[in-house]
Length: 113
Length: 115
Image 1 (cartoon, each protein chain N blue to C red):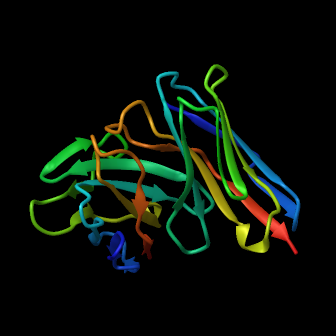
Image 2 (cartoon, chains in turn red, green; image 1 turned 45 degrees about the horizontal axis):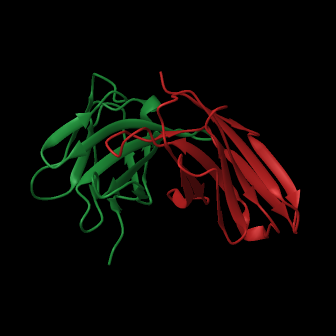
């Protein structure tokens, strides 16, 4: 069945350093991979996504890479700031837009000023 | 230009009572998804609905839980005879659905506490 693994479960970095979160998925047919950020007491917010026709996508300080052969994808945050502190979820968005999104267990990121 | 609206934000129920959680999707979105989040855990899929249809309820417990998305009005997640283990945050998300594309927008959630 569908499964998404995510590592690490917690991550602390100094302000200004980079943070990397890695995920693996099991369904080789999947081709859409979103990332969500959840702040305390709020709902998850989509921050970036990638489709399998590209290997990398960047949006300012955030980038996502995808290795479809290995079924790995990663989130990279550069020049971290305290407001980046949150729980980050990777997800497998399935093969078509009819498919439900399966979330990883989450990574709690703390950026230390 | 409201996003996904969920109410109530907080709900307290005694064991054995019923809980009704409401979700109004974003304007133009006809697909609704319900997820449950236990404390310190990730988001677990429960059910996917379109107007008047349940598309996928594979994540919803067979007993006590039901969901609907009527032609008019919000989507409702209903939990009958609540137990302490039902205490969680319940999030609703909506999307424009196929063929318009992907991408969920989540509401702020309903935090259910069963006492």
